[in-house]
Length: 318
Image 1 (cartoon, one colour):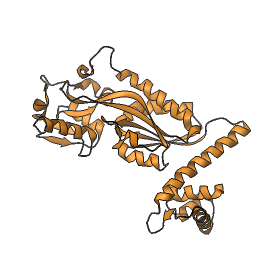
Image 2 (cartoon, rainbow, N blue to C red):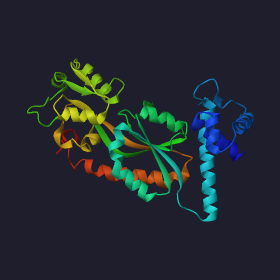
Image 3 (cartoon, rainbow, N blue to C red):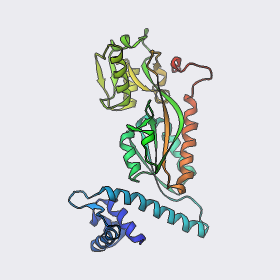
């Protein structure tokens, strides 16, 4: 296998064109085209859909990209181990789901960069359902995510995650109902909660889906919903008294508005979940930095750990 062909494959995918890949590698466009054609002939399938603009990998191309990135990374690691250069270098692409973002904020990212100054760190934020396909295609190296209350990540059952990926639970968490601390009286059950305005994410959000399902099971529905597409803004609106919300407990406790909201004890509205770290099994040369991400997140989560012997349903933000 010619590593120059693998480099061309990655460059074309990253630049989304043969012309851009040629400029990136300092080659002519025909040279890039020949390398991709030789690779396609060797593999026996087309790696790019040339009918699309911008250029996109085929399903086989996505699989080839993941393997090419791993092969080149391992080759670099082999060379460095022989020459005695054991410093961790190169790119590291981390996906962070919106629900887990407060546990890897600016301070934590600065700490990560300080520990691995020779790594080129790229952060991709999004919903877990958006990040998981990137993991499968090798476009990110690891991801920090919330799992669902029924053992799902990004809508995929944990048991159905490909063997090429490994999921590790870092912290426990819960989905809870929240309200403004300023309110004198808070709802005590789902029927009372449904009488109040609700500040929720748009349809498709796991938090909202769980709340809607619980309301239906109790014969009620939320009468007034303010849709907000950002979790931190949702908390700010709840804190300002615009309504009540449904949110991950740790997200609430790491929010700048933590002292202006209260986590409520609504029977049935405590769904267990977890903060998950997912990595590609083949990226063993990245284990040090991925393990460090896990440790940093666990340390950051210490301020929102439940107190011993406390009923989690009774926790409130102080």
